[in-house]
Image 1 (cartoon, one colour):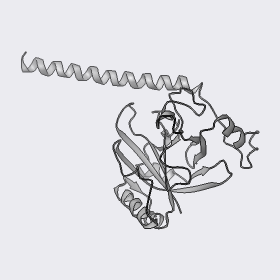
Image 2 (cartoon, one colour):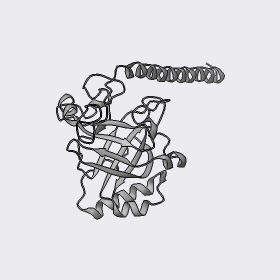
Image 3 (cartoon, rainbow, N blue to C red):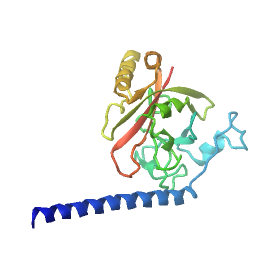
Image 4 (cartoon, rainbow, N blue to C red):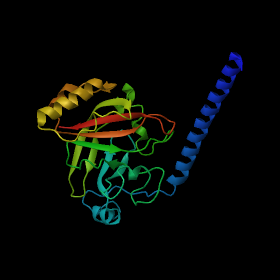
Length: 244
């Protein structure tokens, strides 16, 4: 085979792979749109536990025992339950299951099994669905200043009636193998803040008050989602919020 023919063959193969990626992405979006109509749609529990049309924590935790919190992010449509898989389930179970525990391509935001809602680093994962505001899609693009500046506080509300607000600190775009964010135990407050300061220095964008936020940080809420519109890619968007 001549060099020209070989290049032509490679070009056609690359075009075919590209087309397959586009088709796979479109099929995934269409599937998720279809599944969204059948997904478990939960209402935010009332502050007093029984308001908001009778939806209270007691009802939610009895029907959906893996729910550990409710997450809201100001400046976005994010108002979603957060679940945590028990030891008998795979750690990423809720990437493909809803809060009810049935298969759902949209999944459900879930807290890393290596921590809990009182931990130092609350690492929460959820899908990004291109062209929508589903799950953590509103966070993609937060490495751009205008998007980051539009984010308000994130709030976690717990079944015991307590809640905690977290202020946006920074955004990182990293490979899926990025290990620094997967730390949950710290010998003391200074080690925790040193770890957080290192992350802020690596960030694509950080708050103008980053030094103050890091210096007073007690806990962080770390939201993770895919960066690419094409499913199966390795890049992740990480948005870190601090509680002070």
